[in-house]
Length: 468
Ligand code: FES
Ligand SMILES: [Fe+2]
Image (tube, rainbow, N blue to C red):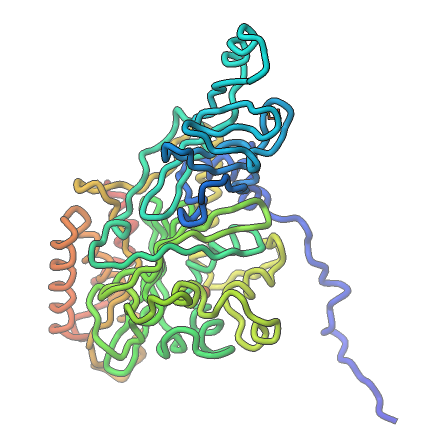
């Protein structure tokens, strides 16, 4: 009879009991929670404009039940879902010439929450109610087919941030959304985890983006003024492919292209495939609202199809059978599979998780700083009124010049690339393109021999921070 032997010292299932307490400081987003308060100091997209018709739309954002509507004068309103009379839901209300009217007893509210009428009541009472009652409302605006809202204290409302990528005239920007049934932070983590592109998106299932992703690269991380950047620098034959993933605190993300670059063709200063925000609906549900960017500097126009944004977002279509999801898992499987809210205590972060560790530290610092009265970090606009960003990819022809491992040189090249970009932050977009492209061509012409890790500042980002 076959004997069953199990080595003692392994099989630690019974004794390795996972902790069950989540990192509430970073993961809870409802009203009055520390992270919820922090996130409420920024503008967030809350809907695709195309989803909002002539009827109100019920939404959940940062744990609040809300209703978004467009009145018949084309004014947008975002209000608390329940009517302050007796709680009927305004998703069943009627959009009026001005504002919205509750379906139950006809109370009428303006887009800013002002009570305009309470029909059937004596005139004196209506006047008193108008002074006493407000429907909770938030500032809301539309920009290129996305609808954004600010859910914080109105006296602290910042300027609406216009990132450079929101203004590129040579890009076709297609709005999309991607839902995740899990906490916002595990969706956000992926942007600073370049290693997963080689495994999840390439080696494990099928090649979901371009071929070059399977190649492991050198990874470098930069932190400067609310920006966190992860650069993956890969040697692909005679070429070097630099791909920059980007997070601007707290939840704005960009990455290199999904399909335009694989390291085989030279590409100067390609920009992000998506311009995207990771928005918590509540503690256990998240939606990414974004534009997919198509054009010479983004993903190829041929990918501008109904499925294109889904494939750019995570390498696979959103609607798939369980078997397909098991055979070729994408980001949604990886991050939802962690559970509704990841327990950080149970993780074992390693060197390739440095970007994630940096981000969580910065997020915690920001949450605590706000709680003690500090101002939240805000990305700085240049003199042209846009915030320079860096997500994108570049491929340079730089043949190997020595047989030794190149890790140090690749890392030094990544630092050089960031210096080049920082230097043109304050120029107009056409001059930035010109300046960066010229510098990249000069780097290429000089070759790998001129990349000396010993004379390259290890983190110009930190250096720049200290100087300003
Ligand atoms: S519950 Fe809205 S008007 Fe009565
Ligand atoms: Fe991914």
